[in-house]
Image (cartoon, rainbow, N blue to C red; front, side):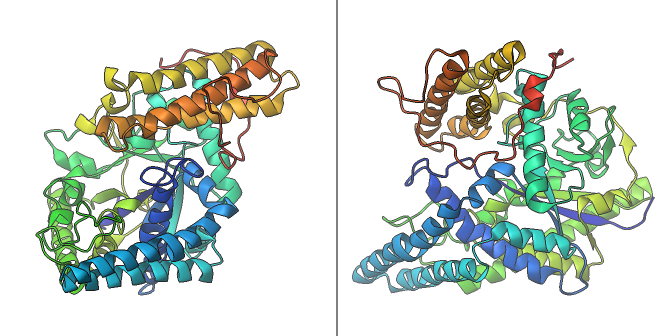
Length: 502
């Protein structure tokens, strides 16, 4: 259809619902750090990135559960307190400690880090604390395309019922529309988890395009072709051969010049380089620009190989977690900005996915069950190792669907909505992911127990067995998921039952 080669950068912004659920080392601090290190600098970058020709530069997915948390007014207050209180004091103490130990260069590196947090607080205030509004403005200016996702990043193929899947989809799409207005039909499929037949659920929800991570076939160039699904939505493969340059263990972020995320000070700060010694920001930023040139040279070669065999332009989709850039990989946003610049210089088009699909042929190809989890299958979220985390969610889904199918809300809509929100919280893919990767000690288990207890009380109230939300002995049902899925409608749970996974 076109001879133009397009690079579609897809940035997946997501945070599990941690607002009000713990602080250090596991909990709300994750959100506050991501706001400072990733989201605010990303907004600043995207505002500049389209200045050359005014064209679009990226597709940005904002999960509804992340947007829910950014919309809670108290989060902004706690963010500023964290920046100007906790983080400022951590820097003061660790700088003094490094200077006392004779590590002046490392202390200087922390001085630069302290200024990052000061900038974040000032930038947050300058924007009126409205990060979602800033993303919306970028979309209105034509610089990005905003995508949504399911309400709480649930792995759709592993849900127990069609009603549960439609609740996740409908609540997520409603959240997006209420905050950003028009929706193009782009949806980030949580964990890129796909199973044949899921396209029917996506089509029913109004999804037009989503990403998949298919295991590379003998012809890896097939990853550069969008695929039709039987039900209608277009599945766009992410190009792992390209993403691996960043994501693999030996990828760019592992360069010894870069800041070492895994070597913090006593107060969780990072003044050291991966290769040892004090972090040198200027040297690291120069290396990030070198890596951007290498990355774009790879893209040009890959697009050329595709054009030589297919006779048309390539569609290269590079999907990354937004939190990787700036937070995990400190230099990642410098790299991304340089990728935009180098791509334009190389004549490689930058496009949002909906715009790119207008120029590239959609091919017919069977898709297989897959994810971007370990080994590209669903075992990260469906194995004996995580059974105690995932089965409570499936049981709760079946019980709630059954309860509402039998008696409806029966005059207890607020109680039914409470049960549904606790179900959404239980269905998050993050709990099993954390457990599989051993990232957060017993935090996922505690969250599952907390939401399960709250769900049990809501169901008991729905049945008339109890009158209020007082916890049982030894149980805790607070804090309330006050900001979760504010636009949720129970209608999908009240629909007639039908076979799932056919």
